[in-house]
Image 1 (cartoon, rainbow, N blue to C red):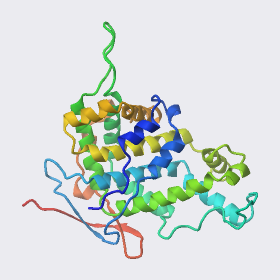
Image 2: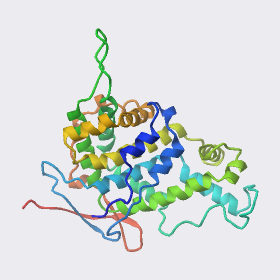
Image 3: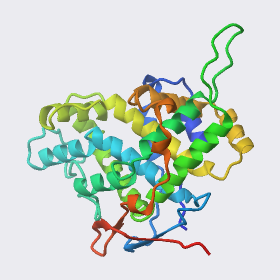
Image 4: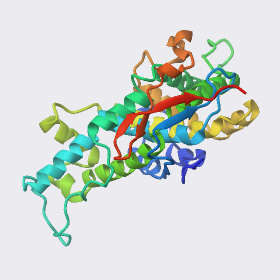
Length: 338
């Protein structure tokens, strides 16, 4: 099984989240750079058949690479909601047609953005991938993510002073159980195209943000940073500005947390407790995510048992890359019990 070349470690999260918990504390540029250090190597990219582990087993095999790949997919999905890719396309088109007043300097011969990389995913295929892995075809994801985030966010709460109400605080068993359930879910939905798709998405994200953060592009839109460029382009030509703070925070914190989750599946209660106790900023990541999430979905209290069931074979709408590089439904088989 291929490994992701560079995983997002607890140490990286600690350096990026040396502050407190709210969405306003998130340094998006630092976190985006760290998300883009994930080097994904996809295997069997043109294989149209997928064999899943035994879905009736007590413990489903968790493939950490699948979970890490979906961390990148989750990040891309939030950038999609921010209209990052659409804004980059509009800026590139405006430059090519001479409608963007960029002052050319020493790099006068350079284009605003390199030509799209071979194999880049167009918007319809990106959205199909989101739906297949973390969206409409993974009905349990939102609930499992909410339960896991809620457990991580409350694990480090300090006991109250005598006479004060007892705050809700997750036990290490609740954190481990929520971690295992979400990791199993993402591992299953990460079979098929996810590894190679994450590699393509990472390159597309880098290209798009690289264009939007160019000083000449920011100057042309009188914008202080790339996020302001996105808001200006969206307001002027994409039907309205998105809630940038919400989706940027969900994307960066969520991607970091999901990348960490990939490494937690093999930990015992004591091992996981040591990780959380040694890196209290992990809880800050979770609280930052919860501070901007849908309030109905941001706490584990609203998650019903029915929403946490394990997916069946017929629930999985896995996608694979065909020989032409297009996403198609995979042929799915399940390992039989010996």
